[in-house]
Image 1 (cartoon, helix red, strand yellow):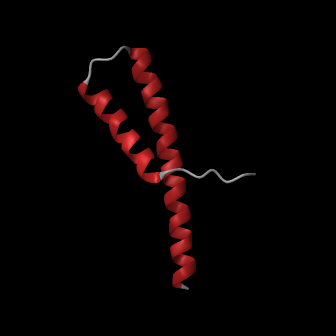
Image 2: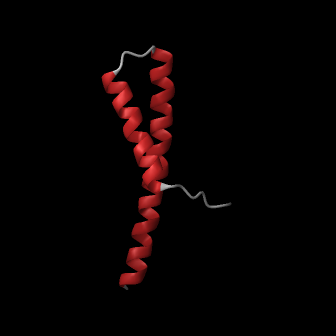
Length: 62
């Protein structure tokens, strides 16, 4: 299986944009749900990237 690489900073910025839109704008329910789903996917990707970074740090520290 091919490892998925993400641009961490770009993904984090997009997640921040999504949270801001959901919190501060009056959006139709359907759009909120789409943004929520996108945000959940970004969180999953970001968590994976953080876990990989943690593994690398542990490997270097040993």
